Amino acid sequence: MDDTPKKYKYSWGIDAAIDVIGGKWKPLILYELRDGTLRFSQLMGGVQPKITQRMLTKQLRELEKDGLITRKVYPQVPPKVEYSLTEKGLSLMPILDLLCEWGYEHMDDDIEFKCEE
Image 1 (cartoon, one colour):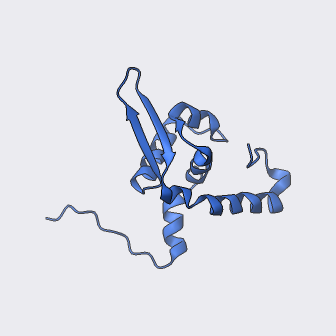
Image 2 (image 1 turned 90 degrees about the vertical axis):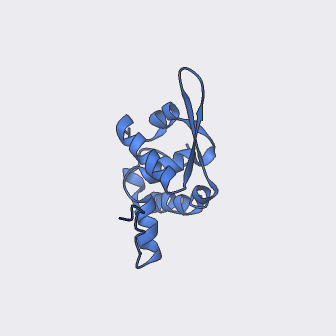
Image 3 (image 1 turned 120 degrees about the vertical axis):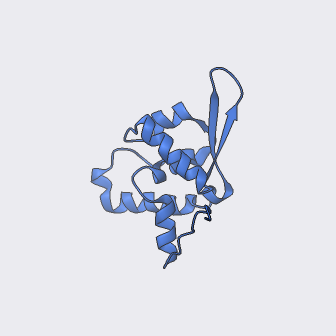
């Protein structure tokens, strides 16, 4: 029996994009990494509204599997783990910037955190 995972065939490009970055947390995690490498604890404190440790771990694993971020583990005690955007992840920044701007233009009264922070 073949254990190779089957690749999903998407109907549209937007279908594929939403599958990779969709959900409440992935765009926020990617946007948090836009300025450079962060440790797990920095991501925990930076993703607003607050994300749980379990959910952050799950989302980071999925983003890494999809090639949007890299995870670097340093062999020390306590363990040090850093996350960075890949080139593929960086290519999403203009899109996420546009989504952020759209949010301000259309939802400004309901926005607590600013894109520039």
